[in-house]
Amino acid sequence: MKRVGFYLRVSTDQQTVENQRQALQEVADRSGWSVVHIFADEGISGAKGRDKRPGFDALLKAIARKEIDLVAAWSVDRLGRSLSDLVGFLGDIQDKGCDLYLHVQALDSSTPSGRLLFGMVALFAEHERAMIRSRVQAGCDRARAKGVRFGRPPMPVYRLERVKKALLDGQSIRQAAKATGVSTATVQKVKRSLNGQQAPLETVAATV
Image (cartoon, rainbow, N blue to C red):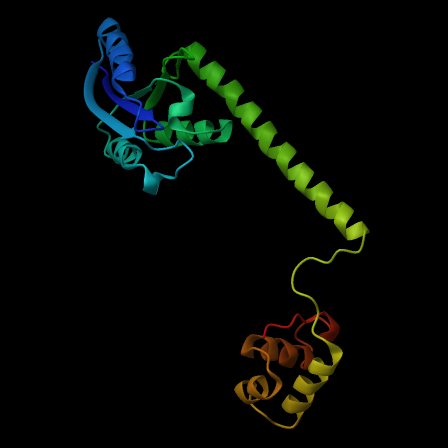
């Protein structure tokens, strides 16, 4: 008999998980499942991480201990807020030999048709991630074309010269940092540049 764990969640204190539990119990009775655990997060948003969802955390721990063969939830949005959340969760639990049933979507990853549909969902999620990466990269390229610099600005020439002089005068890295008002990490970069171990000094970014 398949050991099943219910995951129930509602976003506000005015809602109840009882309707979700009843619907899943009916499915379990029809399917011959043995409900061994019921995990619930009440009044908690699905956007919260595992550390803010004790029921979800307990579910994952039970899966890791191989106490559950299948997780049953009312709907995909009970688990998370995006396709990538769903695909990531499914991948994690299937690595532990556990499947997923979603009542509203009528998806069951333990069946061939369910696995096929979840595979399609994974493709859409990957496409979504690729589109986001592409948009971010395009935005960065446009900004660079307009002269926008990313990261820390280069160290001003006058300060760079002061650091160089301090080092050439024999000061230690800590002494040079204190005398010039920059961090020891920046002085180390300048020193490596002077020794030919780093990029040209003009590219060194200052950290004060």
